[in-house]
Amino acid sequence: MIKLNKFLKVIFHFINLLLILFYLYPGSLSGYILYNDLTKQPQVTGDFFYISSNHFYAFAILSIFGVLAYQNKKKYFFLVKYLFLLSIILELFHYIVPNRMFQLSDLLGNFLGVLVIYILYNIKKKYV
Image (cartoon, rainbow, N blue to C red; front, top):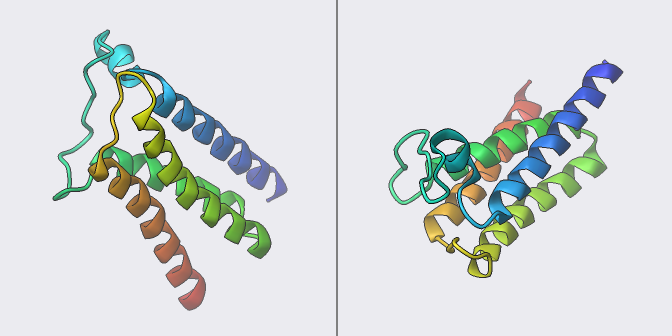
């Protein structure tokens, strides 16, 4: 169990670092990797109303690994605060990163990705 927890922490920190890199890079790294085009952004699925699905998925995956790795109460609450702040701060950085722009739909996707996992984990903890 200890090895699994350490593995989950490594995965969480790796995804976290990767997400920050992709967010702060001036252009679309995933577009460059997939299409050899920094201006083209791949779309996993269509957006949900006015919420970016790509951003929702990215922050939901990061949140899942974070919650699994840091279920300790004290660290869990720090993690949740960190994830919400990260979801806001990274999108705000798009105001200053060249070739990137702030979008409310992306911010909502980030925030809801964290919120949904937070709610699901608390429901699981309460009833299971």
